[in-house]
Length: 212
Image 1: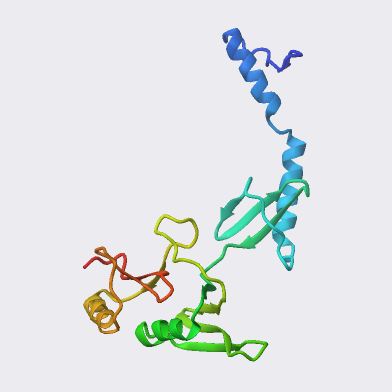
Image 2: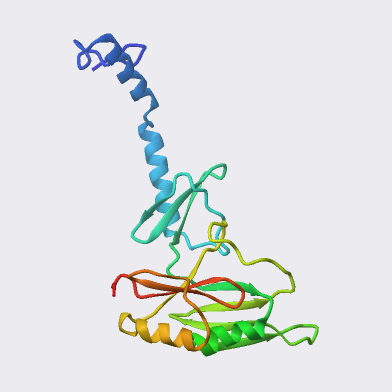
């Protein structure tokens, strides 16, 4: 089957309206050639068998696709695809606090988080950081800060809430425990109770997806 100079297939496109013929020709012209498809397939196969670089380069959001938990990212300008596993869990969360001792009393004594590690300040002025166990290998880092600021408003951008998992059957026990510690709740849903730490950061205790 032959083609005209404008990309129309003689025979197969016969009888189509002229506008439809022009659109078909434009579409065919934009499709990658067989050689281009073969070259891209070769690049993907090579990247799949290559060892992961360390550290991994930054990914470009455009052209990313995830297959079986791995992410293929085409990096513009470099002409290559880099493959790596998707993040599997939260590693740690860090919160800056003005009063590290007061924050420790809330998270350790009131919420019951276990201390994993203490980091001393280099100038000998006490502790600069405290790591608390969140389970499953994750931890909460409380970092001492001398900066003064007002507690963030509910609609401020940035970290909105730290939610910790509790058992549904222990919801009322947690409400009573917070009340005895002098920590009021500012909101409740069928899945979560909400309070604030001494610095004004919002803390949730959640048993989602099981409602009360």
